[in-house]
Amino acid sequence: MNSILASVSNSGFSLNIWTDLTNMWQYAFIRNAFEAGTIIAVVAGVVGYFVVIRRLSFAAHALSHAGFAGAAGAVLLSLNPLLGLMAFTSAGGLAMAALGRKAAARDAQIGIVLAFMLGLGVLFISLYKGYATEAYSLLFGEILGISRGDVIVTLIAGIIVLAVMAVIYRPLLFSSLDEDVAEARGVPVLGLGIVFLLIVAVTTSIAVQVVGVLLIFALLVTPAAIAERLSRRPASGIAISVGMALFSTWFGLFIAYYQPYPVSFFITSLVFVVYLLTRLVPRLSFRKPETTLPAKVLDEV
Amino acid sequence: MSKMHLMPKHWGNNSMAQARTGQIIVADKLTAGYKNKVIWEDATFSVAAGEFVGVLGQNGAGKTTLFRLLMGLMNPIEGKIKLLGESPKRGNPKVGYVPQRRSVNDSMTIEALELVRLGLSGNRWGFSGESTARVERTRAMEALKSVDAESLANRSLGSLSGGELQRVFLAQALVGDVDLLLLDEPLANLDVRREVDLVRIINDVVKSRGVTVMLIAHDLNPLLPVLDRVIYLANGKLATGTPKEVVTTKSLSALYGAPIEVLRDSKGRVAVLGVEEVAHHE
Image (cartoon, rainbow over all chains, first blue to last red; front, side):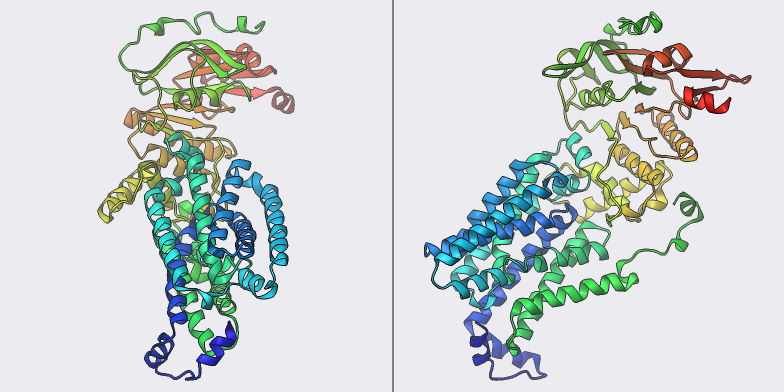
C-alpha cells in the first residue's frame, strides 16, 4: 500500500503546512486514514489508561492475537476482516473472564489462548491464496487501506465504547485501584471486569486496522503508560493518554505521506521516543524530590 | 471445646437479645460459615455505638468472616444479625472498611487524594461535574486532615510507606461519614512507633466522631490502653468481654493454643508476651 502512497505524494513536503495538508486531503484514502485514526486514537487512549492501571497489557496483547485468527478466518470466507476481528476478540475476552478472576492468576491461561489463536490464524492465512499481503496488513496494520465502510464501522464502535466508558468510569476506576473495598461498597467488580474485557476486545479490533496485531501496544499501552508517569489524577491521565495517541497517529500519518516507510513504524516510534523521554527526564514524571517534603513526612518514609 | 471452660462464664450471655438504644450491632444465635463448613456458631453479642472493639483469634478463626457478615458480603447460616437496626446490606454507606491486603503497589502513580475520593463516589455510575468534583476533593481533604495525613494528599500511592498508606486507607473509609469502621489488621507490618501512632489516630476518631471501630489484631500491646471491649473467636465459638477479663494468661493461652504470658507492672500497665519472647528475656 505504501507504493500507492509513494506514487501520489509527488507534490513533496514544503514548509507551508497548510498547503501540505490541502495536498494530502485531496486523496480519499488519506481522509479515511485520518478520520479512522482519530477515532481509534481517542478510544484507545481512554481504554488504554484502564488497561495500564488494571495491569491488563498482556491480556490486550492476547486479544489482538485472537483477533488475528478471526480476521484471517473472515478473509478466508470473503467477509470483512473487521467483523472477524470483533467476533474473535470478544469471544477471547469472555473466555479470559471465565477462566480466572484475579489478573495475577491469568498469566499462563492468557498465554495458552494467545498461542492457540496465533496458530489458528496461521492456518487460515495459509489456506487463503493472497497469503503475504493479508498477513502483513493484519500483523502490522494498514491504515492507508481503510475504506469508507471501515470508517463508519469504526465510528459506531468508538461511540459505543466511549458511551459505556462514560457510564462505568468511576466504579471501574474504583475496582481497578482498590478491588476489595469497591466490592464491599457495592461495586459489581466481577461484572465490570467482564464488561471491560469486552471493551478492550472492541478497541483492539478497531486499533488493529491502524497498527496491526503485533504493534497494538503502540496505541493501547504506550500512550497510557506515558500518561501514568506524567499525571497523578485519572482525569488528566486519560486526557494525556488520548493526546499522546492522537499526536502519534496524526504525526505518523503526516510523516508517512512523504516517506516510503510504513505508517505503523512512525506511530510506534513517536510514542516510544516520548516514553523514553518520560523515563530519562525525571522532572517530567513529577516525582517530587524527597527534600521538598515536610520533615514529618520524611520521618515516615 | 475443652478450652472453653477457661473463659469467664458471663461471656456470650444473651442480655443482648433486648436491644438497648445506642447499640449498633446486635447478633442473636448467629452461625457463620460456608455451605459445608461452619466457622463459628451460636454467637450472641452486641456492640454499642462509639465502642472501640478489638477482634482477636487465630488465623482461620473467622475474624474476617465476621466482617463479611457485617458488610452483607455473606449471609448467616443461622441466627440473626442487625446493623443499625437493619439486616446488613452490601454497599452500606454507613460502614467503612479497610481490608487486610490491598492491591496498591509501588508502581501506582495516582495520588492519595483520588483514592480517598473514591470512598465517596467510587460506587456511582456516570460522570461527576466540575463542581461536584471540587466538593468531593474538599471532603477527601478533610478526611485526610482528620487522620493527620494532609501532607500525603498529592503524593503518589506507590511512594507511600506502610504507615502512611494505612492512614490514607483510614481516610478513605471515613470520608462518607460512617458509623462503623471495620479494620482488618491495620497494624500488621508496622513498626512499634507507627503502631502506636495509628492506634492514637483511630482512637481520636472513635472519641471525637462517635464512630464505632472493630479492629482485627494479633498484637494486643498497642491496643490495650484504648480498647473498650474484646471480641474473641476460638474453637468455633465467639465470646466477648472487657480487656481486663479477656487479657489474662489463661484465656489468651487458650485462645491461641500456645503459652502466652500477661504481665502487669506496678503502674497497672499490661504487656502480653508469647513464650518465645518470655524465654528470650530470661
